[in-house]
Image (cartoon, rainbow, N blue to C red; front, side, top):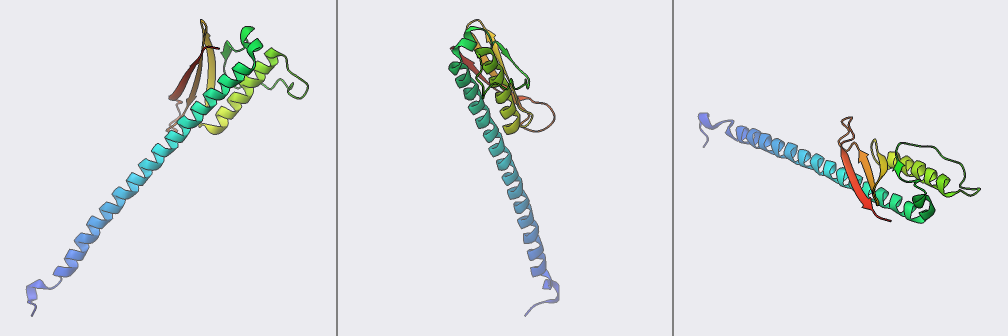
Length: 147
């Protein structure tokens, strides 16, 4: 037999359980959001490494362009020399490589861009992008190449 003082006690237990369950679900949602953020960050780093290796392969394929110094300073969007269908000389091919490469960097990475710089006999390929989308491209991937 229930006493007058024990009425509503089960309802109070249910409300407490509901609050605890709600905090658990909020924590689970936060965990899922962080997991998605880290997964996206890993995807961007994977794209950046692939793009760095792509530029290294482009440079290896145009050895005459390397020897002439056409890859000594690649940066910015550049322009398409329009010679792919008619045949490019090594300088035009280097210009096309820089344009195509940075166009793809901008397409696959948020605020993505790349540079190639020569120091001695080593080329440094650097890609930067805005991983957290806060307005500053502060994440980077650096690859060094000695052709």
